[in-house]
Length: 219
Image 1: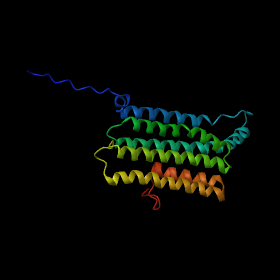
Image 2: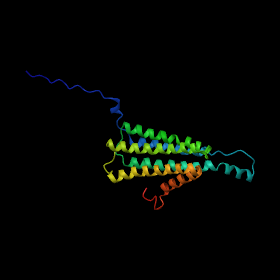
Image 3: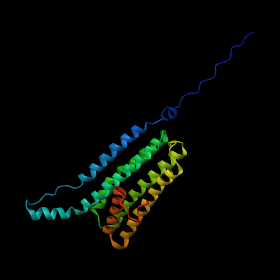
Image 4: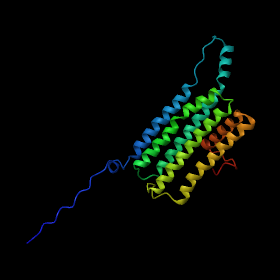
């Protein structure tokens, strides 16, 4: 007598399995949108002052707004650098998963804080604590960027084109620039916040335009 085999029980599909795959294009799109919003918000902090309609009044108003222009340049460069850094990483990611997507959102949550730390620094530009809060924001950006990349490698999400040299270069750049940001904060403690901020702006300019300065060319 033939016996029919019992059908194998089907395992239930979990939400985590359904949500496992994430589109890298969607992650890149939401990142582009949030960075664009943050870049817009920081310029809105430079408000046109009210006053007399005279050259002298405008000149005084522009001088008073100098801290906000300085912090605007600083933060616009910062946002541009971290936007480029994120997209450089995404270029070396073959696929995404649920944890990777949430880590990217955590990174963007830190990006969204930059307009606040920028406004705080502009308002209290001569106060060490205000610059310290801004530096902590920079540190959190670097930490999240590093964590995202380490997770992508360990989870097997990185592209087969990623060599050990490429991985080391991506991580080394984060660590080196974070060390320079910290040096800028340390400079502000004995010399005041303005020298520290200018130092960080110069570091950001080096990252943006990559001049061949011997001390920074290999960062």
